[in-house]
Length: 422
Image (cartoon, rainbow, N blue to C red; front, side, top):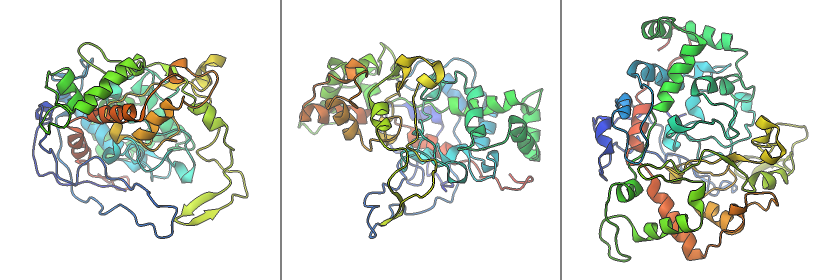
């Protein structure tokens, strides 16, 4: 489990949005602290993990984002109250919110891994049970109207109860059980009483967790500074600073090949999603696999063949159809934002594609092969040089202040499991 890390810079987050390449935090607070698992199948595998972060990060004034949104993002509606954000942040990292007090929200939405999981295609929940979908990143979730990849919730405040109560996630018995556990902690009870007239309730618990998630705004990428900010681009091979010429070529392809019809860009902002549901063939491809894998890898070079039925990441998933019941919605999933996409792999709803290069190649090869998939995903003609340019463009969508969000996240002191802890 990751803990925290000490920042070398004491910067207010408001300054993060300036166009700068200056590092915002030390190496202990950066996106990318993940084990790639390259070579994991071999007994000679050696982990990429080097250290466990042990010092606290630097708290940032996230509520100020409403006043000065990062370049490239729309205006933020509603209030971002600092007291609610602070309380939500603390709860987000508290393992006591799960049934057996071993899982927190942040153990699936890992700050150092883009508020998703880079190390697993699909996460592991309560008592090792499989979760069937890739963890969505929480960057800019404030702008997401239909939550979860199937769109089954439309409120961040209500959304929290799905993972809290799901038997293969945090596995709490009921909403009342969650509230009772939080109320046992005197610090939480006091802080809810100070923040809300009604104290700790279902509504206020949802409100504080939603407040923290809404504050995870990240824009001001190299693309934003070029496209919205007017920064110049460079000539191929010039070696001068500016927006890379190859990425500019990739952006032109992104528009010409129709990618922007789903990953939308507006005149003054870009969320790189239409918020709608589409079939790219990944669900069809997933359904073609056996529900029980022929073998399960337990450790490098160690495989076993299951002798009993068990939940795995390969169980059936019909996408949006499970919400609407409409046949046309089978294997449709919500279009993800492409912001910070270089940080949030693996990709697709099931985490089945490990790299950006693999995703671009997937579309160049016609998608997943479902006869009913969106025709726009079956007709993308891309040469190898086109694919290289598209990947270069996608890598410029990384925000300049993602490391500051990591440092802010790791400013939390992780609570003890006892009722009287932090």
